[in-house]
Length: 403
Image (cartoon, rainbow, N blue to C red; front, side):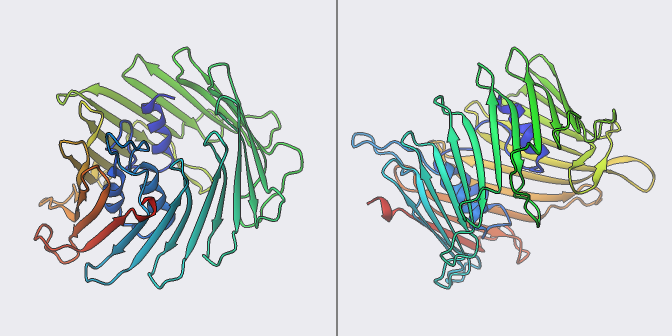
């Protein structure tokens, strides 16, 4: 799938601030972005993302390269010298992560543990999750792969009792594009539905000659009836439109338009506009009416690096006028080596006549000589003095497990 189409999938998943193409900077760039997230302290969300994109994976004696990822990450949320969180990781000889242990309150006992195993080709084989950090794994996900490295099956075993609670199979065309997904059983919800040999969910997709999606049909009970319909249209290389009919009743519940244009930086500007809401399972549906509820602009430079991201929400005011009400602006700065050395964000109430930004945050990062991230410092507006030089959160990284 082309990057900008994958972007739409991410936005529709609710990631309004998800990056929609390009790399926000390798070798630690993700750390600065994660530091900018007020949800820091979630070992699953933040530590995993850090590890997957921190550093390059090749090391040579002639040209030193960054390690595949950090070994420990320690976070001082108050910058008061007291440790608040410690996450450790282990890696195999191929540079693949095998263990993550998150001590989210720094009391010396893990609160969450995750473990991974891989095939000889380096493809993920199992992912075990210990949600309480008590040494007993609660869930196992297992994968099989085609000879070409395409995901063939995914199974979920809740309780790791040797009995699968959900089995998903994937089918591809000769180009390697996903054409069908079938699921037997369900591991979601309070009461899992075990597999019984029949299909509980079938999703089929078609693609055009340029490998762009055209149509996705969802049959939730495999009775031959389409329960959800997604259709795509494309205008050359610049504009793609996705229309979602949640119940396949002929009513477009959500319309997403993505426009990509060249900018003066030598890169591209990507604008995603979302008209209507579509939250399956939450009964939150607002039909598309030609008025956008959300827009997100992302600007990339000539190296494909994300420079700026601006998200805007809209609503109808008491006078019946469609207007912008809230803006989230994020900026990313890189050094000459292409490392993400600073991240900043600020919210603005666009209905406020003064329009002063609030909940501002700025994170800076330092690296060693080969590009391993060592430390990030975050200045927030918690004390009302954004930019005063006071550090409100410090995160440090070590790489001793590689030595």
